[in-house]
Length: 281
Length: 281
Figure (cartoon, each protein chain N blue to C red):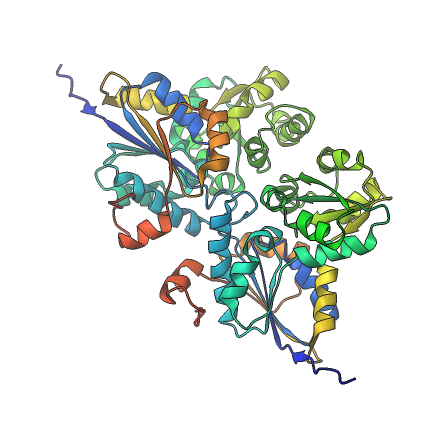
């Protein structure tokens, strides 16, 4: 049997509404080190999770256009909210560049992990009400029982660095108790900020299996593509000035990047007439 | 002595990053009913309190341009963060239209209320680090002792409608205890979302005098201008689609408005080449 040669991926683009997607970047860098990473955090317009689908799609296309201008080979949408609303539009927009969101890989991983078929999902209000995780899980197994709860306050909590402590535990139990009463054995952390709460959640509820999307995305990439060896660089771009982001990116990524730069996405988008964004300075 | 005739104000424009400024609109409508109100909530780009000053000023000018296009006579910046960073730029931009922010009136009111001269301020990170409240208070009386604490999580808490309950009280005490240890007798609620927590804060700390900016702004308007009698209309504009905002505006304003409409501020701004925004459809 002849094995089809895998595509060589030299540049990976990742975007998120803010710093949350750095949890995905970190996981990827640990396993796939020879690639050049371009990370875009749309910090000037975050959070996406409380905005309408029209607004989310518009912002998302601008983010994609910027990264496509960097000649990426694969585009990863690290934002759950953007993944829930914009993947079909992005696939059309990105043309021949493969687009991977976080929802499909996360759902697949949860489906594999659950033993009793009862799966809980927490996410932003927009992600939960999109019904995308629920739909993916039901397609994998119509017998799954899926329970959801939007957990919007966990995002600012993580942005504030409050990943442990009394208030954090109170909020976590407020959001998780209704799901635990349904006897879920697996919980999808449906927002890229939540993995920073993994340790706290695990200590509070050691019996629950926690799913974040970083690992399954890494596995998809490793299974589908070839990568150069060596040590690639990492460039980080933000739409708001990076002072605050610097702090957050250290919290998420432990300062492991080569460049952080501010861009005016609106101006670049305008100049490009809504196609690929060519120049980044 | 001849009294100077006061200017007749028929239209008042108010903007905020989101729904918080509706607390100001509500207070004004109760006392000044004959005016036509235009309220703009920049919901597509909120929150401002975590963004850089450059970004805040840029967004703020676009908001002002839209309201000036409505032929307003007075512009009220109901957002503390925008008031902290953008008032001088806005005064230049708005030319002959008087611009009132929330910080100067709030500081003046606190200065009048305090008995022991120890004043506390809570606000967004951006408002507190601007130092504007602190500066205004020191100018009013250099002997004032001013203590501040950014309270960023109170904004999403109010947006979520969690204005009472255990988590809310825990967060409030987390933010206020350091100020109370300094023996403040007056607390400036330096964010338009916080007045919705007034009742809870008052019950927790009945000895502390609470200052929000809505009342002093009303007093400034009543002292400085004439208004038509009767019942004026209220139009509300948002930059993101109003489903979620509808809920919030009911929470803040009890549904008391004539129209709520979505606008694409970025497109209008572009079409107007950065001057006054003429058309709103």
